[in-house]
Amino acid sequence: MLTFAGVKFKNPLVVASSPLTAKPELLKMAEEAGAAGVSTKLTFIKQPFYGELRMYNDPRVGSIVCHDRRLDLEEGARLVEEAKESTSLVIFSNITYEGEDLGGWARLAKAMEEAGADLI
Image (cartoon, rainbow, N blue to C red; front, side, top):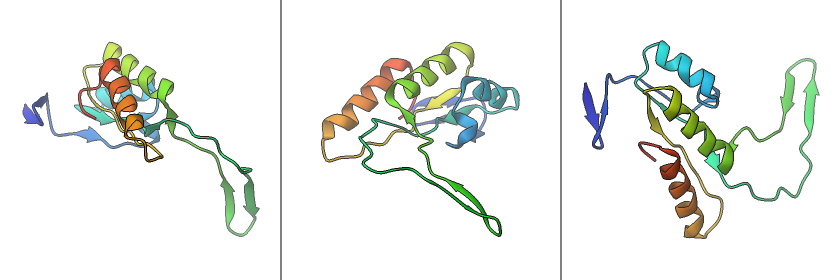
């Protein structure tokens, strides 16, 4: 047992933010594999995108598919809620805000706190 930032962990294994921490079923698998905590996939408040996302393909190199893999506010909050209901993991909510309005950061943090995140 160890304590970090006042939160108790059963061991030091925490899964970093990645595609592995974007879905409740994957968080359950992380816990079954021995993880004590996870940092959720990045959550943000989506802003308008004034462009066209395209796919690039070069048979010698591979393909590049441009799309946003981050979670929006509702998806992030739902992930935290479901993780807290179905696992005993310590949940780090990984957030960012695009813009100068500090209220956006506060809105994200408050939503994750209300969803049950242990750390932000």
